[in-house]
Length: 212
Image 1 (cartoon, rainbow, N blue to C red):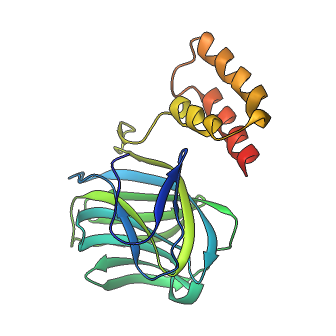
Image 2 (cartoon, helix red, strand yellow):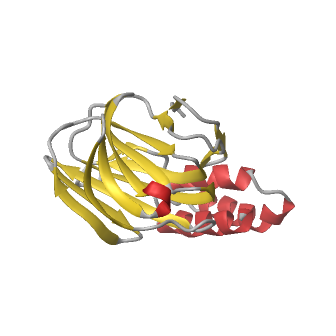
């Protein structure tokens, strides 16, 4: 909810946000925000095309922001960039098709740290944009994103649904194959499980695997 596509063919399906246009520079922006220090996490999967993912952060407006370019330059490199374009800490890296990746970006003052599947890829200091919101993008690539969240450095949620809500959305996308999981969902809710109880995460992952 609250996302605006600037270019490309973006569609929400359950908790998945998918971009299927193969043109260059397809972007979508969440509602404007002026967050300073935060943790931005998202899961991403490449569906096809030439490159990988674009994960936008500290978005000041549609023309000024950072993005983490994963599998850029013909799926050969990862780098942090500003728009207008300046490139920082480019290093070899590629993105495989059909695999879910866990992406995390931590910004604190001028410090920017970028993690891929738990591994620190970039650790830089850059001060062009001290605050802003988030976005997603692709470049000549089809991709889908899910589990989008932003929290403060101490864990307070700024953006994103709780796991119970995500699970409910994922189950809506399943046919009769999801009946057993729906019974688990109803049992957890009847037991009074809190929205971010770890059992929702386990059930959510089961639903995603079944959908795939």
